[in-house]
Length: 160
Image 1: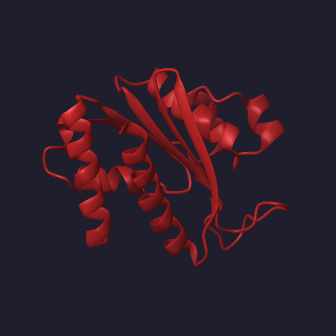
Image 2: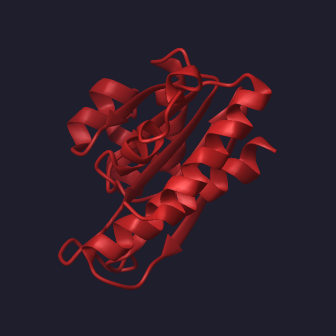
C-alpha cells in the first residue's frame, strides 16, 4: 500500500469524523482494497462501519440487494449497478455514506464498449447518489490501485 493511498485514507477519515459520518464500502474489482486502506488508519473504527466485497453477481444480489434484472440489463460494470451497490450497502449497514466500485481490472474480462480498465464508481448519502465511469491504463494491480485512489478522492468531494 502506497503512502499516497494511506495519506488519502487518513484525509477521508478526518473529513468523515468532522461531519460525524460513518462509511460503508461495496467493492467488486478492488477486492477489499479500499477497506484495507481505511483500516490501516488507527482510529478508523470511529468512522468506518463495514465493507462488502461482492465479487460475484449473486453476491451483489444477496448482500447488496442489487437486482439480477438490472445486472442482466446494464451489465455488472455499469454506473447503474455501481449506484445500486452503494445504495444497497447503505441499506444493509449502519453507515451514513457509501462508496462502491465495479470494474474490469484485467487482463481478461473486456467486452465490447467496456475495455480492460473500465471502472464504475458509486457514492451515496441519504437520497443523493453520484456515479462515474472511467477507463484506467495499466496492468491489473495498477488499475486496482488507481481505482482505490479515485474512489477515496471522489468520496472526499462527495461529502464536502
